Length: 110
Image 1: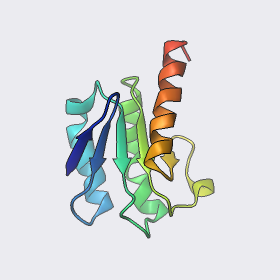
Image 2 (image 1 turned 60 degrees about the horizontal axis):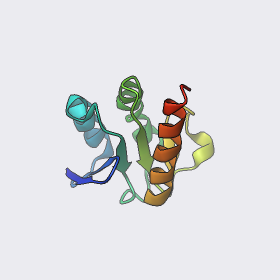
Image 3 (image 1 turned 120 degrees about the horizontal axis):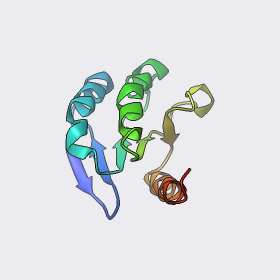
Image 4 (image 1 turned 135 degrees about the horizontal axis):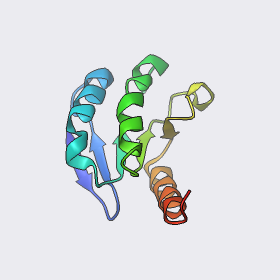
């Protein structure tokens, strides 16, 4: 796994080729990142399935309990099929924008 530290978030990238294993690995490391907003870069998975994406639901929900963002980036998954509990955007820039919006909402008490 690669991690890239940005101003108010960390990008996590899979250096292997199994999104399900990556989801389990991230879940096992969530305590290390509990005070950070996370962007999960899945752009390399051009044929990501909904089943593979749903393996990120549990770590996402767990991370949001810590009042931190968990944004998945993938530009091939059909967003209409994604449950609203998962935040999926097609670009890293949109992930950054969404984190900023969620930070503002948390600051306002939403």
